[in-house]
Image (cartoon, rainbow, N blue to C red; front, side, top):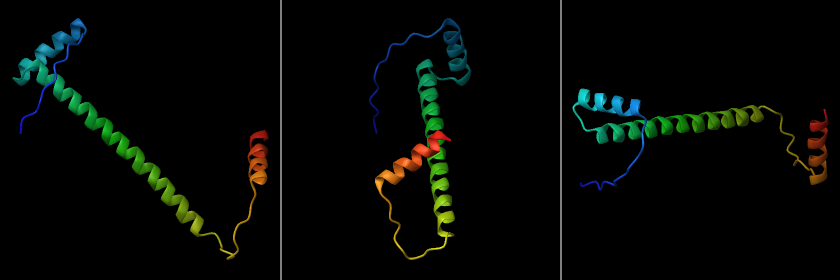
Length: 95
């Protein structure tokens, strides 16, 4: 499988250039490959963090549902109107 490369021209700090050259030499790879690996590592780390965040959010939701299941069920539908909900929110904000 052939991967199409896209040419990019970027500006980096002098200290970054020196670091890049040393790292490429130490690893025996090109400077471009060091940059590509850094981008790949950065996106993998970010995706792991995003997945962890979503997983945590789902767990909170599941825990909430499990707690709600413990409340007694009268079998009667809950009846409310929009005005009551707004008043409840306003009262909470005023406290």
